Length: 253
Image (tube, rainbow, N blue to C red; front, top):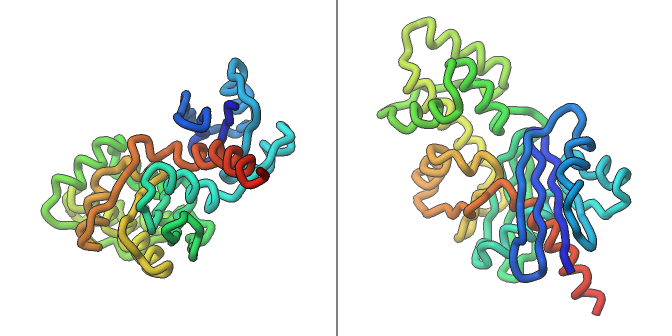
């Protein structure tokens, strides 16, 4: 059996094909105003026996493709636990939200927390801040990583934080230090969310922002422990969806 999992996020759409033992293929594409057309294009030449959706567009996809939809919490838990079986705390920072999940040794969810529906502390927040500093994302990460100290950012509201950044630059603050200050702000918010679910080793960091080495390094420094990032952290939710099909089949036996 080949199972497909699709994660329709606010910034990207992720697709994974799994045969029960290994990932056959995976793909990540930017999302747009018409997510269903992108999904159709991604699935056009793909063969699979069943598909499960997650992400903010999961119910729309489910209606169009007549399939099961599961929550992001469940999808990311299944994907992270399968990838790193000793994980006990999962941090997912995506385009529009942040999730902290605590799981037990069997991979069952003990507790989870999500940020409010706001761009603060998410990938979109980092994109807007990078644009305010006239950096590409790679330049933004490099800039923050090279700074020796961070310029404090007091507001986590995206609109106010952008104004604050522009004001800091206007007063002569160094861009590298402002970049690091922004990264410190997102890490502070993420760690606070994780502490609400009782952080336990090992910690697995997933989602698009997990590709940001500065965020990962600052989280490790703040917590004083190693944080694991899967090889492709963006596809973990889609992987969890694909695995859900096999888990459901096994549970029915």
